[in-house]
Length: 247
Image (cartoon, rainbow, N blue to C red; front, side):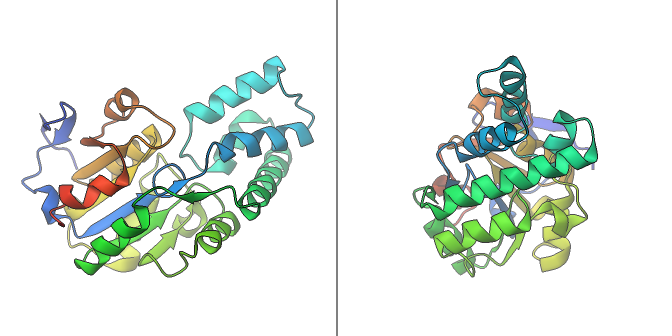
């Protein structure tokens, strides 16, 4: 859907859709960096995975790969490894090593909810909104996060790239799958997306969502989020309910 651009009170571009943020009935939230504070575990797990494949920490190769990981936060992890390594077998081995290392860190109690995240999801659902949690991780890692936080039944639905045909962000597939699987909105303009990365913003805008909110608790700063199309920039996901008219 192509729509004329206007500006929000934050000075960032927003689609002129004829809908208000309070019209959103389906809310699609990212996990790590948005609702889950992982304290840089993605980078730590990447370092462990790269080392297992012979990339020495501190080497030029390691620094180049880490820069790419940082730039593509939010993307499906297997897609990242396919870019970094020349062949599918190596990419799959790197992804498995990453998922294993991340799961070990999660099992070690290294994650926690972003302050107010659980309450935000509960508040939105109590107000009749459908809430879907999405991630660029594989299902096994997403389930480990949900188990560690006690969030198995917190959201209406949880999705990883494999649940949406295999393509993660910046493709809009997970957002649109959330709509199709839940029936939580009767129009893409009644979807709100929130995330901490540029790829979250791109996925939200490409889905046609009217609210694409960046949060400052994760990988990317306000300028990066706005450049990628954020309609709003929030301090954290805890500021989302008032934006959507839930008080």
